[in-house]
Image 1 (cartoon, rainbow, N blue to C red):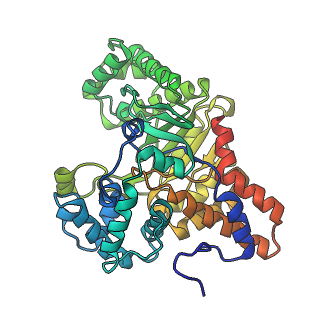
Image 2: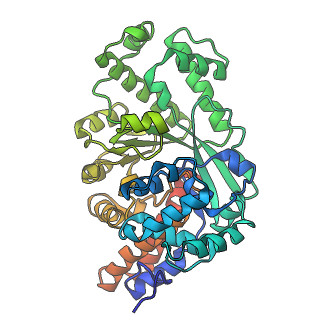
Length: 442
């Protein structure tokens, strides 16, 4: 009988255990996250485990709300010790939720604590973790996890002062142009100031974007990221874009959508010229609880799974540029129902990848399903593996969670005689590390 969260957790065959033993200590490339680069630059410390875990983790906040915990202990003014005890009290209710796995893997891997977290153990674990946290800093934590590459998420107007190389850790910026889609005059003014270009025409706008993108590249940017609900239904021509730009405050919804499409195509061309990867995250409905959103703000646990995209709109998007003019594109859907279609589409267009199980799909069952679908409808051998998409510096245990699931996925097939152990080992290494390393050219 297995003991609680022992070294073989999630590994069901001897082959799985063998594969895991050969990938668990591979370096980590986190090619999409929301970590604060200023904290990495400053090598910040945390006062206690409550601050580390609950200062910005909307996964935990959402779970606490589901259990009826008062907002005072989530985003309110309670102490982090009080917040930690409230979180500890709900952990036994989280069976099957990825938070249950992540919580205990983090306790083991960050603090060396092998006890289950609950109300009875909370005080003991709090004190023990806080003794360890005295000697931990952000960079030491990342070093302990063997993180070598972090791609933070950055607005085009940021100065990127904290991105750069810290010993053997590269903290690279990611170009996230979401605010460009709104064609907001105030933001356009800020863009112009950042690029040192007075923006009066659509060509000025294009040049300002290009200037900022080149600045990002000079700071080590290799990847871009885009978040939107649905793909455009139509695409403005250059002449239409010029005309629309001169009357941005009077555009109707169709014209706004066409400008959005025009901008995406322009960005794709820039990315291809600079050998940048284009990530696209879609099918998200954001801030659905309007009253609480106004009180607490963005990224606080009020986003949900949106409708499945219209596949024809994705096809039309990919058809805007030929295979040899399109950048490498990674597609992530929050609505899992689209995964099979996206996997199929990745075989019809060169340099298009079906991304990892993302956000609400970052669960034990959905990661397995994602691996199944990619292997059956596309190609598992080119899969790009795991990323954190996280704001928490202790979240790198999620890589271990993924590598265990991957090792078991491959190991089960070997155990059944469907695959060879040697090929399985190499496949697991590629998915865990080498595929994304090759794509990023690092």
